[in-house]
Image (cartoon, rainbow, N blue to C red; front, side):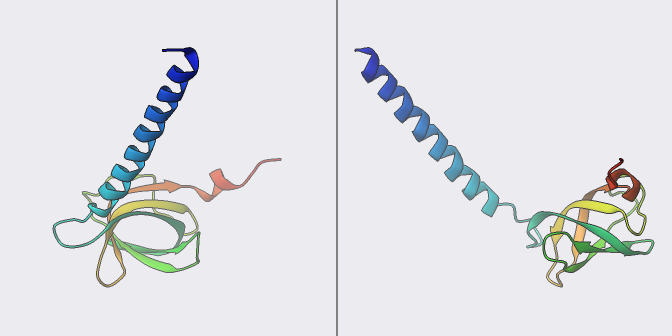
Length: 115
């Protein structure tokens, strides 16, 4: 084979692998359903209220208010403080609330740019 044919075959194989990976990712994402029927998701927003077992966030992308439920067994990076940014990996419940599987908190002081 000449160099041009080899390069063409390599590019075609690379394209097939890339498209196959994308397709597999799309199929896999549809299978991220838990046994109770909720869809696994990641959501971020600013904490607006908190209690011992839940807190509310105002989402960054569309300013929706979401209620997040958690327990003492939920992995938590940071402290839940009103005004801080939370990123939650959890399961969407039928009510629209989210049951957290893990929570990461970014302090409001860490977000403010310094001059």
